[in-house]
Length: 254
Ligand code: PEP
Image (cartoon, rainbow, N blue to C red):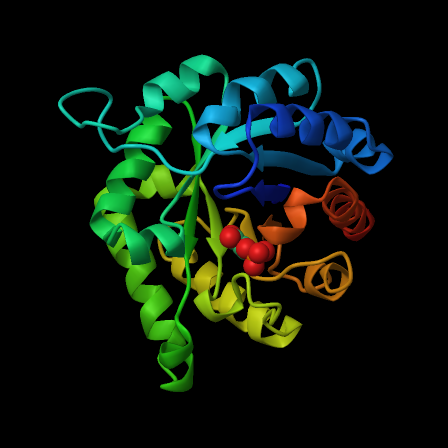
């Protein structure tokens, strides 16, 4: 059975004290406490808030993830963060290939695949992001784009790494815009991604939808057969909204 996952991407928000408060609220929510048997809950604060988040989540079922890592364990990479250090701190997950990093740090599919491989080798579960821009959707090349992303990342990371990862389908035009994909658009993309994964036996990988998920649109999205949860940006910064989304996922998983 595929694992349901709700992951929060806090982006460059929260200082360490904010992170402590937010994680404390999340771990004390009834829906999150109910989740472990149904849904895995992950929060991904900025690097400098990770230690506080880990302490606040200690002894609970909530996992902490990073928003990025380097593709090498160590070396002359000024300002970078090693996945071996993240894993050693006690993190469980790391997001790789978020569209904001593709856009602002010009990360390629090849580098994203190498990050996923190194993260996996260090004991982290990569959350690998793919998704098309608005122009690409309007040009009707959505499946070409996400198919190419998956093929190039798999060629770089290796099939076994992708099999052990989580995929997040995040249409770029839906991120932070308040304009989520419709359930039909999301389901179509997820079914396509699953068919690409099926080619090398990775069809049971969890595929999360990301892009303006709220507690209002979550229910219809989670009722789609190929949507296994969500990567949540803006709404994950509000404990009530995030925990409501976890509650909706619990209901869908029953
Ligand atoms: C994200 O940044 O991964 C994301 C999905 O953001 P939002 O939920 O704010 O669209």
